[in-house]
Image (tube, rainbow, N blue to C red; front, top):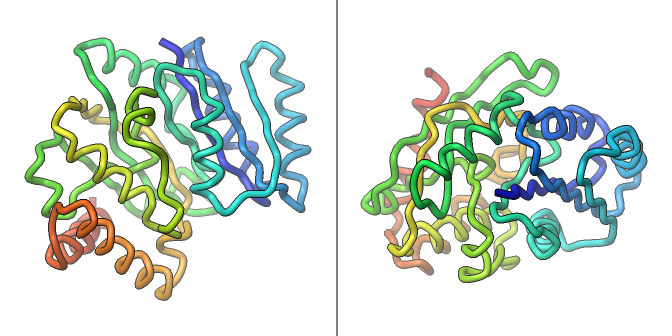
Length: 251
């Protein structure tokens, strides 16, 4: 099974090394690593090229061109990916341990699955060992969608066929395109998903969706549009979705 991992970068020089190293240190051998850079104005691209030059055995594809934001960049990565399974490691994030991809592949191989997801930890910008929020997921059932449930998107690995059927991220959403995409996928009852009960991704706090009160409000509005467009709930779904996050700070 070939795994394609996509990283979108833009002025990510402070974190690109830890991000790329977490992928390149994986014990699973058959990984295609696709990096989509949005014409960074710092040394992100040069650093990525340098790391690639030091890892000649790795299958690394780097593309740099102007884009319309992170979801456009991820769509470009999906178009380039040739793996059986596609996942994302954002430039501020890292895979939790060197066996993460092997464990994901093992889960895919235990049964016929279209997607695998797990848990996520938010960590501080300066100390990735300091956990400030723990997003523990659960086995999927369709009734969860109306309650605002979703798997942590950075932990979600899907068969490439899913993207071929469902399409890519909808660029009309500036912050919630991942939620819209997840709703499209998880409401499709032809798919089967597996939950891997371990931390797959460590995410540095301060991403676009929770960087400011303004962004939180924008995201909530976009979440509501996604819920109603996909006919899986209403305003109460967004209330439950936001309230479910509170407990994550105490785990």
